[in-house]
Length: 336
Image (tube, rainbow, N blue to C red; front, side, top):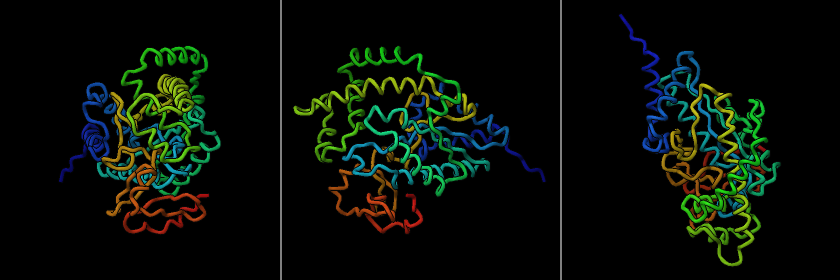
């Protein structure tokens, strides 16, 4: 009896079908720009499949819990939102294994140390976040997820942005002035406001600031607006460093370089599950009445009294909020 062995092309198409499934793909095919994106993805897949190696995906993610009380409350460490993201990656690995047994290697690059100071976060806090996150990885997905420091990979790759800093700052300041008032500038203003450290202010006051879609803050908040403007310019520089001095093509030449947000010509991935756009580090992890993972802003939970906080032993901030039945015992998460 003759058994047909799938060709490299057949397997590549099957893996690609998994990656492009709306269960895992966050952006539209149009936003991906298939003519630009798919040949690169196909080529990377074929090189790994020919060698019988796991498919590699890299993603720049999990910098730190955003220091915004309306978004994450008092939590500084990963919680169930990050855990749910790891479980989502397990589902992707299993789906790929069903068509290609070597499966998946997911490489997470932490950029927290590069951008922490911009948003008023101490580097020690970033280190604590990454350490806790690594322990979650060791518990949930030790066999296929690898964590890396973005700056360390840059240095290892011989990429040195220091000689370009002044030029990048000049470009960023010019962007700030010339694009002011545009939708691009306003979007950057709102995103930056949501990232800077506002822990000294009541959560409801911060939520009120985030609600309007304006490009300036109310009277009395000028000092915060000034901080946002400074951070916008600094982040514009950091973002240029990330993309112009990206070590991933050198460190992972056969990987698919995915993203957590829609970017032209890139594959964007759902981090928690389909339809959940809020990124884990921008919110708190929840379980709804059907036992499905969700990420909500902490301020939303104030108006949804049916969600109950559940703590990991030894911790003082909730690890998860549950609407239905409580999750299985979290005693195994003794991470401190």
